Length: 275
Image (tube, rainbow, N blue to C red; front, side):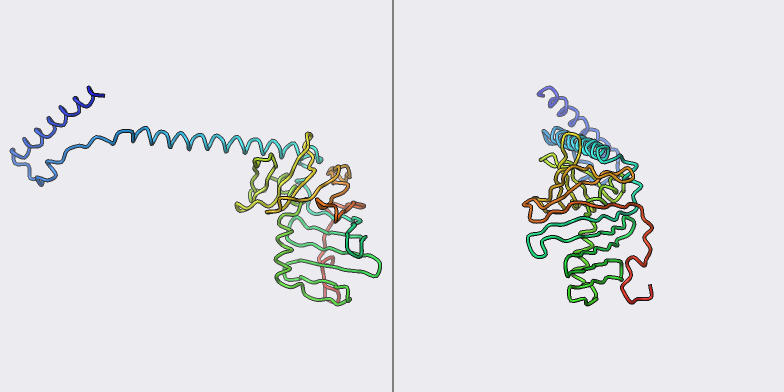
């Protein structure tokens, strides 16, 4: 280091003498610029730049490793649930389930018609002396109440329903299978497979050793729900036999499942409308 500093000092003196010589020969550049000397870079600057670059490189490598692990987990999950192609080809599902609840009525039957291609769905719930319908379909949002009145769905409820649709379990699996460019995957520090849209986590899965989900949760719900064996099969896809809240106060057992059904507008039309 001393040797390099000495060489620099000699070179610097030679440089200044050369500049002065040019001034004496009539160089017309301002004297203040001619007398400027080259300043050595601060000690350790290169080392700091290299360290920052190394950290950035390590971060890139780590992110690539996390993405690779997430993609591997997603592939394993899809394989356990019937295969990527079967889920990617889904356009819609209609599932019927018996649901058990803590409040009255404690047992209801629910049919959910879910369109994967556009944000619309219909939920019809029946029980003794009860018939409820809720439809979300662009501007055609309506519901049948217990009072038998048909009314518009309040706007705040529409927003809540569309957010639920955005993280719907089976539609999200379809999006993973079809490699939807609007979503991305990751693994959190608990090993959960996470799905993101616009930088927001929309769903997470806990997978067993063979890749089958046994728990899942949407958005910031860290408790989530449980799912039983994915042994209900229809046209190549596997669906859980049951799902439940983590505390068991809500449970649903699937009874029927249809996929890729032609969804006519009449299926979502408000009673009494021209449709």
